[in-house]
Image 1 (cartoon, rainbow, N blue to C red):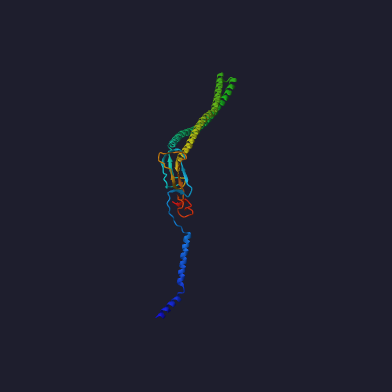
Image 2 (cartoon, helix red, strand yellow):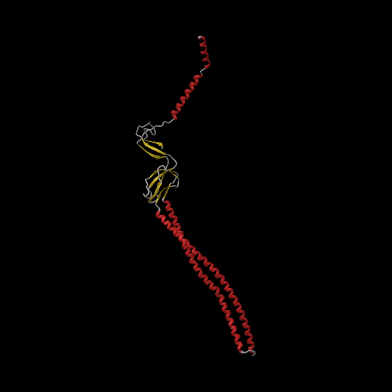
Amino acid sequence: MLKTAFSLTFARLLADRGHTTVRALVAALLLAGAWIWWAARGQVTLYEISAAARVELDSATYPIQSPLLGRVIETKLRVGQAVERGEVLVEIDAMPDQLRLREAKVRTEGLEPELARLRGQVSAEERARTEEQRTAGLSAEEAAHRMREADAAAKYAEGELLRVQALEREGLTPRRDLDKAEAEARRLRAAVSTLGAAARRVPQEQATRDRERDVRLERLYSAIAALEAQRSTLRAGMERLGYEIDRRRVRAPVDGRVGEAAILRVGAVVQQGDRLGSIVPSGRLLVAAQFPAGAGPGGPGGAGDPRRQRPG
């Protein structure tokens, strides 16, 4: 019986060959290595209480300042509020500039009918010039035709006068016929002179009317230029007023959150350059606390460092 039990125990010892011991040793080494790594790289959170702390930022902030003196009529500044670039945060009363802008708009709109009326007069004068020149051309052509007709009649009368003079010298016609032929020739020659003067007077009269019309057109063009200059001045003033009105809308300079905000109420008066708040761009808020000497372990943030920052 004892011999059999000893044989079984010895056989098992020979079969084991130390595998269990090796496994136990490897497990112990792994556990020790893990503990050493944790001791070297692991972090332990320490909680301490401080009576003095403040919120700080880990990046530069963008201040919000009042651009002008005025009365606040709307404010959206709230600490922690998310804002987008260009969003209106504070609006300062711009009623005086808005009234001046409205007045300038009314005056500008009032200039348009006057400009339209003057341009209509210019168009009418130009059309009248064209019509008068066409009529003057027809009148000159008609006068030329009449003058040629009268000249032909005068030449015929002169030829008749020569014939009567020849008959009168031969005694074949009375003196009365000669006088009558001379009078008719003089009348027709005078008619030719009159028609020639009338024909020359037509372009002269047209030139006079054109000069008078040029003077009227010059006055109209001057009036139009003055009104257009006035309109341009009003529009420039409107742009300036629009810029001043927009300046009274304090906008967010960047995307982020309101880090601080002044206590503003509707109706409060702000001065130019007053700090209204600040915008925190993409980043974190940190808490800076004061700890008494000896609090916590030594090293940065411990007993040797009265300030300790934690992410907020």
